[in-house]
Image 1 (cartoon, helix red, strand yellow):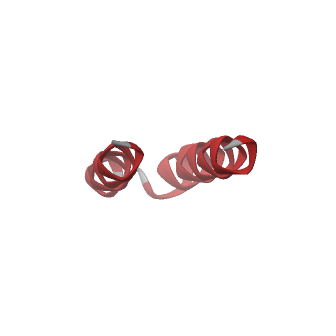
Image 2 (cartoon, one colour; image 1 turned 90 degrees about the horizontal axis):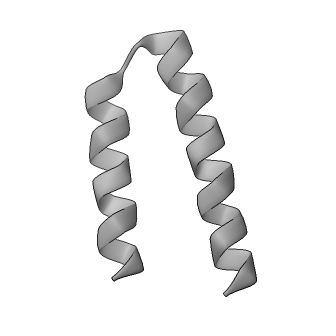
Length: 40
């Protein structure tokens, strides 16, 4: 479980960096929704 939380944290950091570089908010929102679905 700890590893899973760590992976999510890394993904969010990468999404933040990618969002700043590409301004791709729609892609980020889609990936966050996928993470929420996986979490449930």
